Image 1: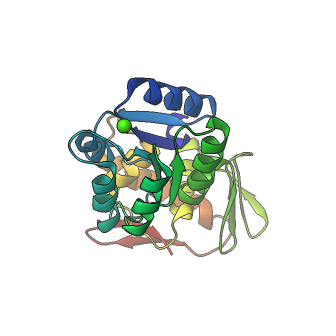
Image 2: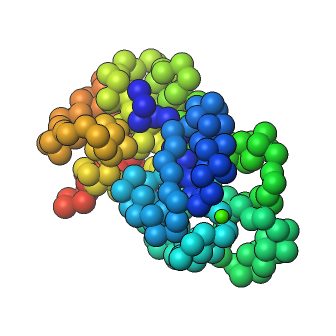
Length: 229
Ligand code: CA
């Protein structure tokens, strides 16, 4: 299902550069969206939150540094890893000095293989479940490669939606997810689903997790949504 694919936003004004990035990221199994300037980049972050941002320094109007600075000062976007691209090593030194909060820096012309490795590294940090890793929360384990879930050693059978719901919860234990946020993450943006469906599937997930006698690990936060733990 496409929604579990890690999502990379490319912000780059040069079409050839954008194309190379998009092509190689797609080959690596990433879903990509593309912005040609800083403003569009900020807008796309709002519309479809990426797991990693590859951000060019030199952009028309709003510079890459400014985009980075804005995203890193906002509580809702601060955690998205940003890999900054620059044509000159001196610029990288400058951006480091400016403390824009970028997570990594790559000088152009870069080796595609190296950049992909860095994107993978940031994606694993940002979305471990989408990168085929096993997630653990207390006595619950979820493996996105084998699609199996266990609690206290016993296998739990989950429907595909419940599985993705649990994966989202387990990526960020304690985080309160609004119904809208869960709809985006679990169902995807392009699908129209009523927010009440979220309640139905959370209910099913709770039932499945507690079937073996364990306590319900999901917390209902009144007026806000749901959280694991
Ligand atoms: Ca540029």
